Each structure stands twice: as structure tokens, then as C-alpha cells.
Length: 190
Image (cartoon, rainbow, N blue to C red; front, side):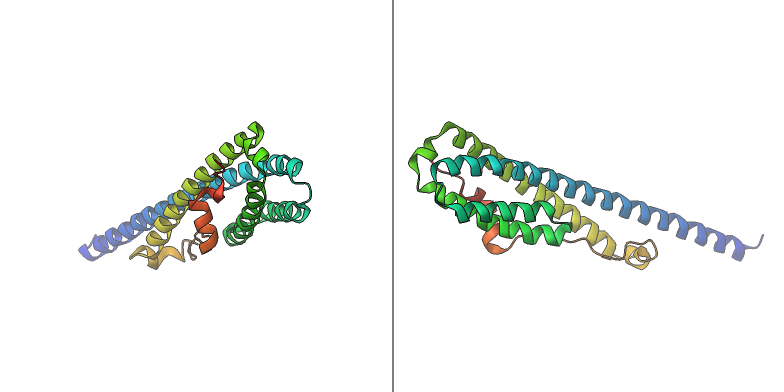
């Protein structure tokens, strides 16, 4: 065999190895993003499951606040039915706003704040908010890693061919909801 043919074969083999390494790296990062999103949805579901109990507890003390309860229930339903990162982000923003209203109502009832059931729900919700925040940070970090890998040279050249032609979306909340999450939705009634 001639030296030129050997060089061509070596170059082709190297390109195949590089493509396989890039593909495996993108697949791994894609799976991490999917896993991180799954963590978020688990925590959101946990929170959504707590809300009916919280609403029932508050209703017992503030039955005349019907519109607040309806708004919370509607926002919860929209959030549960949201699909994808963008739609879930929008639903979460709305949900956070309605939760603020619910806690504002609860603030007006000292007997409610002293209730053991309410205290337990408050603790559970605070814990869940912390877990959602941690899951969100983990997810956004994985999205950053995926997007960076996909956009860097030489992966960028092969990403479309390997069917990784879109960046992943970050799970972002608007400014007001972001503050509510960093201050666990004003759950502190002590």
C-alpha cells in the first residue's frame, strides 16, 4: 500500500473516532438534561400534591376567600398540565403569584398560623421549594453543559449531522417568581 492510502485511511478512522466521541458526549449530556428535568417534574408534582391539603386547611379558617382558592386551584391545574420547559416556566410563574395570594390570606388568620396541620404543611412546602430550587439549578447547569458542548468546535460542525441541532431551554422564572422561590414563596408564618 502506498503512503498516501495509509494516510487517507488513518484520517478517515480518526474522523470516525472523533465523531463517535462527540456523539457519545452529546448523548450523555442530553440524558443528563432529561434526568434533571425529571427531577424538577417530580418536585413540582410533590408540591402540587401538597396544595389541595393546604387549600383545605386555609379554607377552614377563611371560607369567604373563595376567589383565592379558585385561582390557586386553576393555576395548579394549569401547572400540572403544562408540557415542556417553556410552558412549565410560564405556568410556574402564574402558580407562584397565586400562592402569594393564598399565603396573604393565611397571614390574616392567627388561629390558622398556629394550627399543627398548617405548620406541617408549611414545613413540607418549604422543604419542597428548596428541592425545586436545587433541581432547577442542577437542570440549568446540565443545559449549560449540553449547549456549550453542542456549540463548541469541532462538535458544532457535526452536531446537526448527529441530530443535535437545537439548544436545550433553561428553566427560568420571571423576576417576581424568582424572588418568591428564593424566599420560599413567603411560607414563613412564624
